[in-house]
Length: 438
Image (cartoon, rainbow, N blue to C red; front, side, top):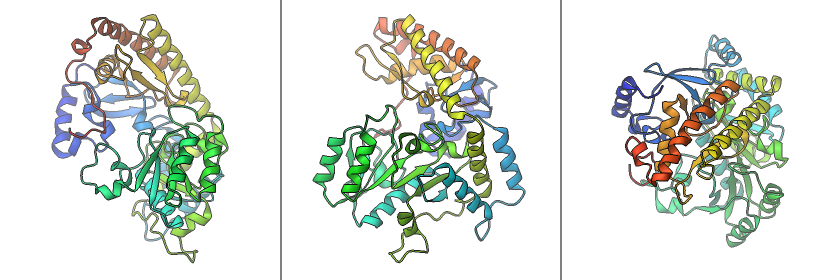
């Protein structure tokens, strides 16, 4: 499985000829997979996908965490088909826009208004713009320990891929570490009256330290700073109501996406009415160009979002994600320990959002060892840069994955003993997304 990819190889060449990077999202690029082992997908069903060569894979991190219910979920597809018969875009708002907004606000009761768009970057940048307008301040404080917030200059300028972004734009973004209230307070004091907002994921690879989110809420209120939670991942993985619902801390603004549409393009900016109305028609303040997208309220995507929220309401999707993740994490840790590589092949994160780390002989993160590991996974019919589960996976899928990981750990042990993963990499190492040169 996954080792005979002639059609995928040809398809990758086609992709690179017409699309910069060969994919519309850098995280899906062929450089993220071992050389010659980047399958091009034909179709998906539930928790499995098939490549153009006919190979079948158990898939993790589906759609970069966007497909939490599994591919082609029947309730979502039924809702989309029904809406498509009515048309998808009009010169005035469709009634489904009100219905979807009301449904969203029922699901996320900590928010008072919501505006839909098509991708997470637009939503987070709109939140930043709104915070700057509301406070009259310039600086944006982003959490340094969270990987991605937006494709826009205020964030990308802080990464190694900052070509084409003016330095003065980057200088308007400052950073703070996750989980350290004292550091956050020092940053706010150092830039007293200058910081418009603090943006972070409420949780990511680790749970928030006790009192951290509550303390951050108090700090930002005291300093007149807008608190923004990026719920692109935590929304519909930590709980159906987002991390804010789970931890009981209400931000001023929050952004949702990914699993909201189960693969259909829909994201949301939500928050307090007094802020959101600055982008509306019922405020006497200076207007904010908040979000205005031709396809932002595409009706079938809103139908998909409502269907997703209905499935979460009717079924224990969160419980299912956690049960599958717990089973997978326990299995991986057991087989890694069995081969003596438990300190090198590590599983981290909440059960519904697991990632794996690949460490070298000195226990440092290693792209060559990641390459070796991914090569064994893909060859064994397991596709994914993470161990993020979807609810469509079965216990048998998890057990099969653990078997493949066991084989990967056998090879990993050999590489550690040789102090050289190169013989098992099959070519160049996989590369981090954010890097200065291709």
